[in-house]
Image 1 (cartoon, rainbow, N blue to C red):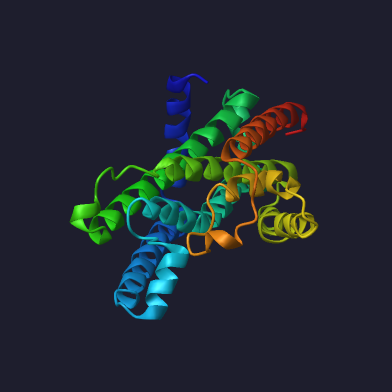
Image 2 (cartoon, one colour):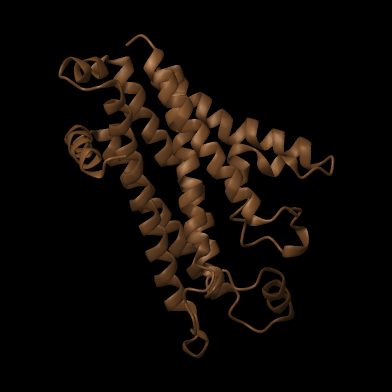
Length: 272
């Protein structure tokens, strides 16, 4: 992709979305809800388990210290993933509305190539990807610095690989949202299908496969990235995944390429 073209297309997209109420509400909602939830959870957890009772010691041994380096990176990435569905919904709205209100046709009339439309939306995808990853990184860094004892700081970036895992997770979720919106074209139905894929179908398929003792469920499109960032509050003894991280990363990259290829192929053929 030509970066100068992408930047030019993003500036056009930004003119469209910056004053859009849904963009302000949902993007702002993601920022505020994630920050509040992460900060409040960290504050309550560290306050509640700051004593020396037997119960607190046992719990600390089971789950570790989710808001202290290096585990805080995992916690930040996991909590960011909980709220990222909001960005996926916003992305669907921005794409599907173009079809529902026929505004995508005006772009073509004004001289855009079909692929310019895809590139313009990909530029917005990159914006969401970079801003959300930066937010998760800064939040994890600040919370870690606040709650990690000064004598234990050491290499504060140990474990920060989870920030990259979050970025990969965000990419796959946004591509699924993009794919859903392009195929269905109707905003409401696209959101319903997206939520169904994320909360129902993916979890049911994973559960049915995992309960049979299979590890194949971890290679489902959404589960492959979800599994890279396990719940930091779940004891390791309860973790069922045996497949290595690199295999899940490879699966997520392959899925991303397939989604992009299919999007490009489909949009070239459809009747605008």
